[in-house]
Image (cartoon, rainbow, N blue to C red; front, top):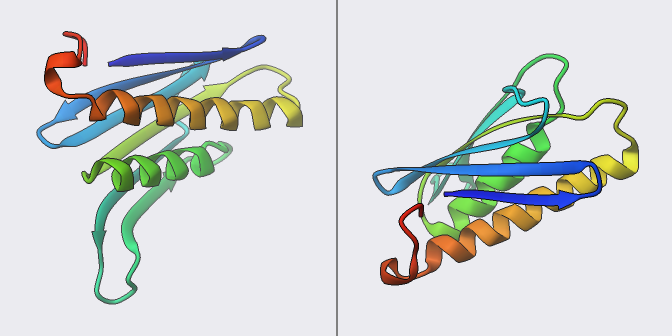
Length: 127
């Protein structure tokens, strides 16, 4: 599945690959790359009561919050393990545009959940 959301010069794309019950998600925008990777599981651990989550953020990149939020939300909503790779780079991005990027990512996450919850018969071939 591939989803895109836009606001002015900003455009984010979400690509989703099914790996059995689990999901590999790629979130990119502008000059695509890998800046952060987050993995979340819907199952809680006995020690902390929190969901299992791992985060790798490459030096000089700031996609970690976006990747972690997206992985957590998708895992909780869909009941599967989710790995999100995020890489977004827009030249001379402003603080306001960074907030828009986070909002676009949230919008894409919601649309992805909606699409994946659809019964298989209602889903197109690219789901």
